[in-house]
Image (tube, rainbow, N blue to C red; front, top):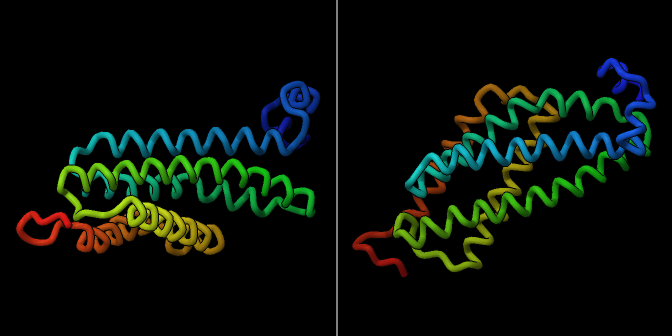
Amino acid sequence: MEDIAAAMGKRKSFLYYYFPGKAEVLRAVAEREFEQMAAAIRMAVERETKAEDRLRAYMRERAVQLMERIESVRRLHSTFTSSEDLVEFLQVNDFRRTFDTRERVFLKEIMQSGVAHGQFRFLSDADIDSFCAFSLSSLRGSELDLMLDPVDLEHYDTRSVAMVDLLLDGLRPRGGGDHS
């Protein structure tokens, strides 16, 4: 708390006026970052009209947002000096689960719109749910790899879009407009 207050040019008592402890500060920062990421992703997606382009925009902007934040997350990770710090970080991960749920709903909307407009082949709700769960798990795994070793960070956004293009080959309607 002293380091945070010093970085702000304030006394520690100033922070305690607004936050009971370090966990609450960490959570507030994480919430703000997740909200900013979500807004940027949504804006990028909403600029597109075709489902394929919306999916590409989703992946590209998500990667860009991660790349902008990866170093600060790595620095934060390196500050964990005790099990208490780790518990506080895991409490932030509870908020991450909330963000992930919202992200899954948003990705599902993109997929359902693509199916409804014939831009993607017919997929049941269960198939769309599976696609979203798999995609987000894959993205989180990639994020973890980048936090541990950011060597691939430079091309992460283009690789994410390339993976979407591979996925799209399986999502496009098959011949003659048959959506079954």
